Amino acid sequence: MIIAITSVLMATIISMGLMMLCSIISKKSKNNREKMTPFECGFDPKKSARIPFSMQFFMIAIIFLIFDVEIIIILPTIKMIQMSKMKTWFLTTSTFIIILIIGLYHEWKNGILEWMN
Image (cartoon, rainbow, N blue to C red):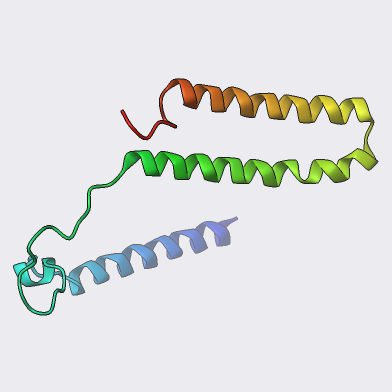
C-alpha cells in the first residue's frame, strides 16, 4: 500500500514539476499584428478572414452525428432477431425508434431544422 501511495505521489510531483518548467521556458511573447493577420501575399487583407460561425449548420451537423450513431446502434438489432424472441425484439426496436421520432419532433418544434428565420 505504501508503494502505491509513494508511486502516485512521485508521479504527481514529477508531473507538476514538468508543467511548471514548461510554463517558465515557453513564455509566449505578446501577440503582435503580423502574427495575428492571415497570410495574403504580404499585404493587409481587405476584410476579416474569420467568417461568422453558423449555429444552424452546427446544429444540423450535431443532429446528423446523433442519427448516424443511432443507425449504428440499430444495425445489430437485425442480427438479434435470430437470438431473441420476436416480441422482445419488436418492443425494443419500436421503443428505440419512438424515442428517435420524439427527439426529431422536439427539434422540429424548437425550430432547429429551419434554415430561414
